[in-house]
Length: 621
Picture (cartoon, rainbow, N blue to C red):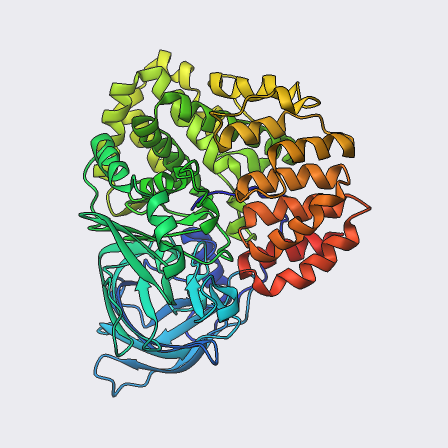
């Protein structure tokens, strides 16, 4: 998942659990803490190893309905199977021969976690079928009316399962340490196409029925479904672009280098093991930059900049095919194992294709964003550690620049200490050794010491593992970050009063972002007007540039940008962009009412993930 800036982490205690049947409240709570604090499942007793999903997509009721067959491995000969669910209506349950109608019970609703679904089984049970339907307000699903799409003719729906939202559209064991294969049959309106995180067809089916197969074991957060008016364009032998037809030409041009990215990634860390790698460009309400669903990355249209300057997002999601999808964090406390490795891998892919100066710009911008976030959290905040403690909290709270950028710089520190060749050999073996498995931070550190550091005192002192993983803030041995390209932006920012003197002919999005971030915090409206006239910021079609420009406008009460900003907030749902803008609007007494008015208008078009974040910001004001 491509990161975003997270502000205002809040701890909320988990309430006592209630299940009934054959598991006491105390026993269940203990099992959760020992296995996964964000799941009710007890996989040491009975674990789901395969799903067969059969669902109908109803745009009128905004409901998915049908059943799921769960293939169960009963490890301890237990008489119960515990699943995760959230806002699901469970209609009936059957075992094996379908003549067995077992008892089942939904527990009390726990904030973030939903409800435990406990089903009575026998030690001999192999398959459990659950008939159910979702809620129209299912947290993972966004239903878009035709007017909310680019083409304006057909509705659209998509899921976002990470971190623990898969349970709101499938009853399953929703924990990253539990991996399973799946098949699916999805029925939707005949004029629409269905796609999943699996083997996909590229053609519209006249009957609206689509069949899917994911033969590689995946965790639940990588379950994904999208249905809409979708076209396809091939970009090579094993990659291509899906999108609404009106976006297809732009998207395929923007991501034309996907084949080279796959080749570069394989040259670095081994064969791509997922068959095809395709990208689905979603409508703009998608809350993230991208989501690494196996075989089919979901991507925001906000990276379609027209100059290929933001395609590192595709490199990031592709890298997840190794770090995250192949080798997965065992719990959400270990989230950095997914994202820190992926940012590092993303940088290596981009370096191979676009050169080191390009990656230096990425590193500089990301490092500055991380330092800003650490400053806002406080450098003694426990949330600045790589190994998190998300007890009693939504795992979404762990999606910060710490996991992504601090994690990446930890790996760069190791590379600097041992040398790139040795580090690359280690990583290649790491992905091979733990392929299709989930591991904890502690398991990784043991492997790191055994296979690379080997109790070498010099390497231990150079790397300082504990300082990175278990201590707050940034370690003193953090690598230095410099970019000769971004020096151009810093020099130009000093001339902001005379924009006519600034040469921007060879600038990329990264140059523009750094330029704006180097400007004085307070700028007179007349000087902002000159900058706007010279560089057409308010009229930009680049979402990254607009986000930074609107923040400058808000802080300086530059009202000529407000109408464009309102249109932006009502048409873009990517949380990375809307969150800082609402934050700046709410912090400025002159624009607080404007923030609330715009949000009232924009909120229906946002995904649940974005709504939850902005709702909390509004409540705090």
